[in-house]
Image: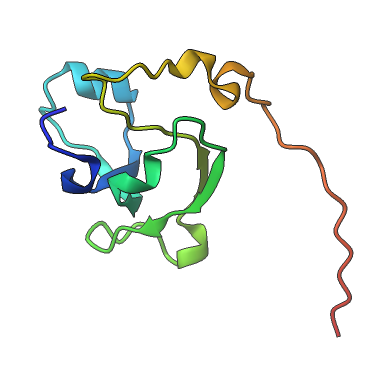
Length: 118
């Protein structure tokens, strides 16, 4: 890690992109044609310092430059888990952490919600 600490690291961005091909083809082509960014989420790197993170749900924000997302609620919701660790002088083995060793369910457990709307 080229940073002295996690606090000095740049922000972490997660993008939802519109690409007619796969993201892999974009990355391997040298980025000759940039995909359109539909929505994004921005985080501080320090938010991912936990070696045993839980799955988090994030509401994405529509990218104002592309203008492809008509309203904020259509920007998207994403679930993920991420851990950023400095491997120099560290003995952290993420494969042995409980949250990383268990398989992620394809679908979350169903919940019954009762709402009375007047």
